Length: 156
Length: 156
DNA sequence: CTTCGTGCAAAGCGTTTGCAATAAA
DNA sequence: TTTATTGCAAACGCTTTGCACGAAG
Image (cartoon, chains in turn red, cyan, green, yellow):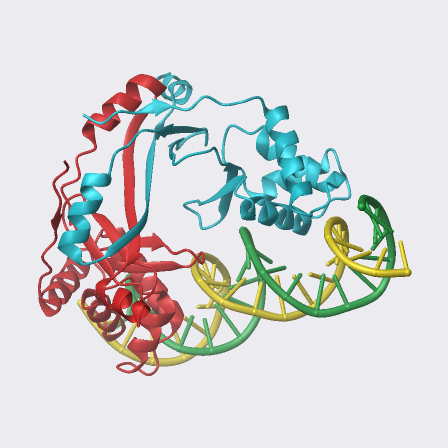
């Protein structure tokens, strides 16, 4: 039996301030546009597409362009503050990257994402390396299903 | 400790004939274009992009179009003969789908793919369902690393 | 003033669709 | 002949790039 543990999420504002500080430390300017993107992604509980982030950001910064969102995400990804995941339709979703090695559980209906950690794949990795001759560097483990709300909605 | 087992691969020609028969059975016509695509994908040891398949297919069927490759892959995927995986750059790679639930181990250097089965994630799934409220439908587990050849080449 | 960031427009890429010509049943 | 299939071109959506304007240090 493998141990798992859902990950506690910190306050979005705290994360946002932390990210802006990290940007500053890396020599990037904490502009209004970047602040908007940072606050949206830090406060989201599911993976957001650049378009969705852009739509939300325009409510705060009406003149912000989609391109600026892409470029802000690029910086955040570079600093390992957000992670990018490939969605089924080929586009990308961005979400906060928490410390440590974690995996995702995503809802196929609403896109909600929950993180967990505590998988222990080391035994499998060792066995595979011995059998295949590969040197295994990384793995990705992702679960999909329906979250409680969507499950209830489906039943109705 | 989790058990793993590498998967034995059948002869490419046998797979190709099987796929053509499956297409026929599903009411699709086994045309020259489809034969080319089928033989290429069935004989590949790594995931191929539509463009790569097209390039190889043109050597047999010079007039074949990229679109035809996409449509052939669509049918093969529908019949669950090939599976499509999302590559890091956002494009897709296609490869033979073997029976049973299997996972991949891919080489980051050369693209070679090895399959394995025997992971047991049921305990983790049960624990996650209880903690998150999700109903988990599927999971994907993928390992990346360097295959023996590329590992040796890197050392040189 | 110098450097970085922005927005716009246009290009790039993988993929999909519309349609007339073609090949299979 | 009837129906599926093909190839071409064009459209599409997501993402990236070039460039001049604007803002931050």
